[in-house]
Image (cartoon, rainbow, N blue to C red):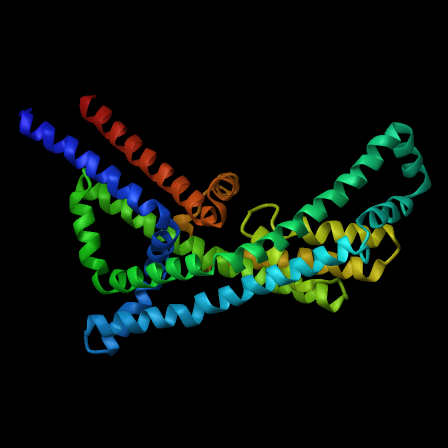
Length: 352
């Protein structure tokens, strides 16, 4: 290989690393601009057809639609969640809600033989469990209170990120096809590989955001309305928590409603317990089975265990961005190894 080509590859690597380092402070804005562009690109094409092919006008209209339909409502919901969580934290710290007393009430409602067995096992451990429950609730409320302070202190940074995202989204709508073609030609993969991986990338982003998020919202709304109807406050916060947990397969919203139903059973409130169980099993539980096939599609479905692990890992590593990035990388991992396996089998067949 000529020295000049080696030098060029070194230069290419260095400038790429430098460019990525420059973008890192804005990676969330860039990432969500790409996500919105992928999810709403079919709508953008429809708008472009209705505007006579005027790309800039269509891109501006598409950005406005994204802001009105998704971004503004999302910001309002996030603000409401933070306020509800902060109010819950204030009620706990003021003593209006005593988590330790609630835990003891549930323990005392157990049948005598169970309570005696727990006491005989290790009364200290049971008491410690109650303190841990109280501490966990306090830490969760403190997190929301801290988020309220952070949101107030980082307003300028938020608007900068928001502006970068909208600015980039405009150009992704307007020049998306040309940018995709340029990227596909630049990637050192065959055309078939780049097209297959690109299609997987697009389908997983759309399935995760459009499909899973809609399913999670429906489940969270049903759970929140049920909590509100039963007088369980703050219902909005619990509904939002069920929405986030519904992104996880297998467990989902049951992490919230099932312990509450068990608590009602223990304290003798059988009607709300039965209502919660019926709604949780036969309404919230069936939403996933009814909506997932038309919204997500079979071609993007990963095994539930892989979705669960990749979602939790993505969120723990990257925050809320991880609920998209985690399954995305899991799907690309499966697609890349599928391509490798297919080519290896083909090569072995040709040799044989």
